[in-house]
Image (cartoon, rainbow, N blue to C red):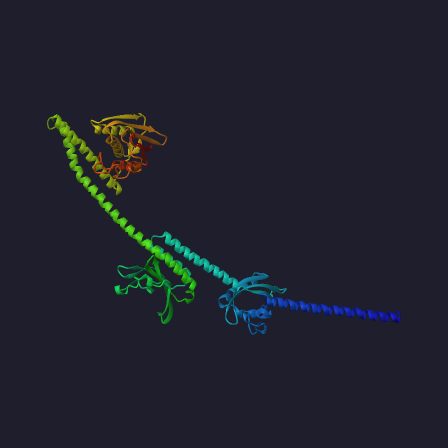
Length: 558
């Protein structure tokens, strides 16, 4: 190679080296610019990047400058003056350490958790940490590389949503209880439990005001009962609840110092009145040492709850009064039934004697009777029988209502008791021109029942048919149906007005209840019949057309 070639090669090599160096410098410059750009982006982002060593307390080897968002500087950590462990909220420190230790022990490469940090000014911030775990070849921990996000706003929003849901739940429960519960004690106990979920209370009670006695009585409580006065009395001159317009519509908060063991502590009392329409029915007293829970929003919720409780209390009080009146009426009804039972027993003995001696007279046991005497004696016998039936019905009703009547269920021949009732009705019809027709098959099956009571039921129906006509026909038919025995009593009497048909089975009901009515009776017959048929798991109903007659239907299970 000649000299010119050597020079040329040297120059080319130098040129290539310079270009390579130049390119390297540009790459370095570009890398530095990229790094600076990345650092700028990171420092403006919500993410704070930490590199921790694996030593106790996680000493910080690197942290981005945007750690200043928590009030600290990069140097506070990198210099070792501050450990990351120190800025964790004391209540969360143990949980974070447990998550970290468990992730390391289980061989995980990453862990995520949410917890609270304390800023340099002692403010609380919520953060989300996502950290990679770097291990050495022997699987020991080398470093932790983590990203910290400030999620305080999200946590506050979640708390706001949870608080709103809780408030809505408390209001919904209050409205539901107010609309459904008529038991004051259950209502108030449930409401106090709901309030306990809303506030951190030590004790609470609901007082109901007795305006007549001028006192407020503790009706329900939560927490130690000794914390609350059971009764608050006031003089007539200082009726603090009389003028509703003068009472505050908002909650009242007062503070007092009370003794707890060997020390004195401050306690807050919150009182809100319970209104219903234009009067105050009571008030709620709550005791709490957590002043933060007595915020405006919670108090507004309580005031709304108070409105519903007040109305519910008044409704429950009205219900209690109604129940009391109902019990009084039941007591009167029981007294009436006892009176009927005693009266029936007292009347029954002489009635049996009257009927017995009248029958003996009619049979000539005491000598022959003239035609007029015979007619008069027959009238005595008929009316004695009617009176006996009335007494029997009254006695049956009183005993049955009290549950003291004992039915005698046996095998009953339907054909027999129906024919017996027809014969009795035919005798009662007497001289009236009434024809009785029978349509009863010989092979009608027997049923299980109380024959005496079933006979009474059919007697009453036939008596009604005869009573309302001086002449005509009564047809009694019995049919064997798949599940029932069907008895029909059809007459062609005066019938029943359409708007009265549904009432005829009521006790003491008469279509014509006036004192000038044409037909007698007490209105007990059909009511007694229905009760007897009901006891036999049967059904009774009627069809009637005014002016054309009535058909009564009875079905009895086989």
